[in-house]
Length: 240
Image (cartoon, rainbow, N blue to C red; front, side, top):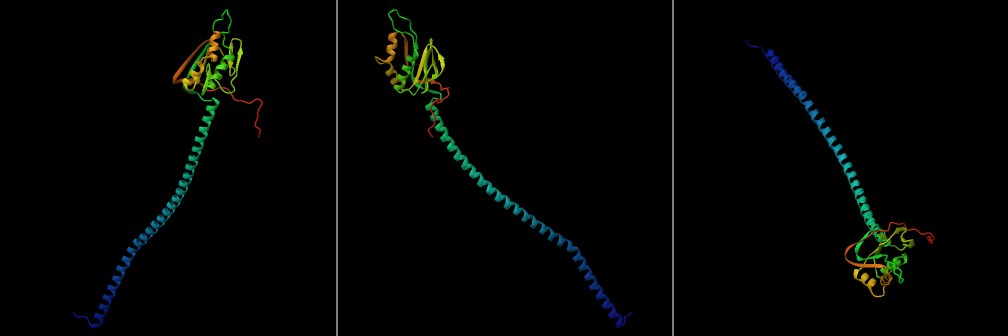
């Protein structure tokens, strides 16, 4: 059976329209299917870009703060170093002043002198040791170049006073009794030679009956304790 021309035309037109319609539907479907993926990708990229920018800003701020802290730390280190140098200088001066004032324990070479009361002699003489005797020996040691002196472990300083109270002596206000052990740090041979030469005060004490012994110590074993008293001026004050 053959179709006439009009019907054939209609069939062809309908077929072409169906093809276009089918192609349009397919294209629309693909567009719809692809649209969410594209939008999703674009949204994800934007979020990542914003996150990177935020982290970059945080990093820059943190780095700036770190630089400030490092500079501050460096300033503190310099201050500490300067303070340590100043502290060392002050500590050195303090040690020096303490040494001069007798406020430091000392050890060294020198001599040890021991004075004891002797027996009373019928023909006279004074075999007892007095404060003046101890003070004279101490002054002789100072003149001979002693660096430090003690009497029965009482440090002798510029303000030290020697007084007699009965049969005891006070040194720095502390009572001490016989035997009187006088220690001196200095050049042993020089100190020993100055005290044992003929005509020295020690020979006069011996002649009077006082028992005297002098020991030269060439090893650094003599210990002289620091002055435990307090320095004070009763009558003087700063002129400023």
